[in-house]
Length: 387
Ligand SMILES: *Cc1c(COP(=O)(O)O)cnc(C)c1O
Image (cartoon, rainbow, N blue to C red; front, side, top):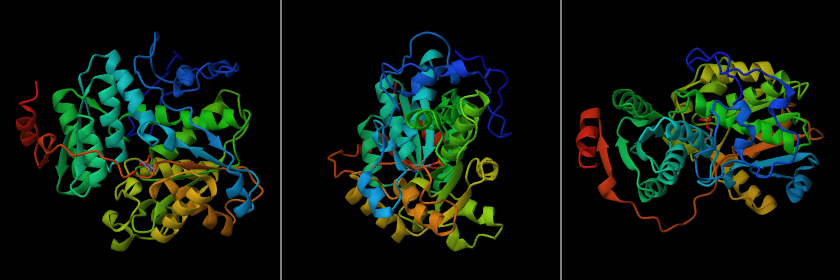
């Protein structure tokens, strides 16, 4: 394990630090290209990885037809839809569960807009750990079906995602469960930063000029910043890419904050956008996002639902990548970034494609594993029968 020198919670935006040096990332070809390749820059102890499913090591696609359409010869797609539960949430889930397996904790909880919950349900099933999920009552039914099919307990909370986060965090604290809430557990950032290491390796140990990513709660972008910054600290890169964050027009608290313009109610309506994966009104680590964007020389911008749908169609027809609307946000934002001079078509630009389109699957919801709740007492009573 890399020696961790100093750590703190996410609230103070202090990150885990390591004894940075170039040997922390092996130069030889990995026999298996997964996120555990970077374990010397992850806070796990020695010994074999217990988490049983390979995570990460996703392809960086050259997408020749898309390059031609856009006139961008150095465009790349980092295809995070290839993770086992079809989103970038699998990395964070795997590291939190690895920690839980090592500490013999039998239950993991998270609140989620959907994808983190699916990743947690599926990952916990693979690890043999119980998952207790909190979502808003307007969570997509298809995603609920996937969670309960994987055996998770799912609680729907009427007052939306923020209330679900409160309940999940209180439950974790009260019952000693693993807390996978994004922005609450620093392991989520540690895991997601491996995307930066992979992109750097896949480009021949060079960072791209620009990396574009959707932004919801913030950990995906903040983790990219941490990963690329750590490569510089290790002496393995001399600069980091400009980071451009994309939000949905209907839910763009950070874009407003970035431009210093007050958000109107129409800018803060998570139910109004099709980009459910990034529809977060109070981003858990919003200040860290603004800070990372500022330091990297990047920007934040918002895209319409029409632009998201068009990006989904373009990814399918010009790159053969099936993305959900939030997962295609980086492509939707690319056009605006080029228009505004934030990215040059001749530069090396990597788009993070974060989530796969929902297949018309046959997962059936298990009503016996679901309940609408408001309090922890109700949660406890519901789970009492589960021994
Ligand atoms: C979670 C998610 C993101 C980014 O979310 P952060 O909370 O900012 O890390 C992007 N796209 C999809 C599809 C997601 O599910």
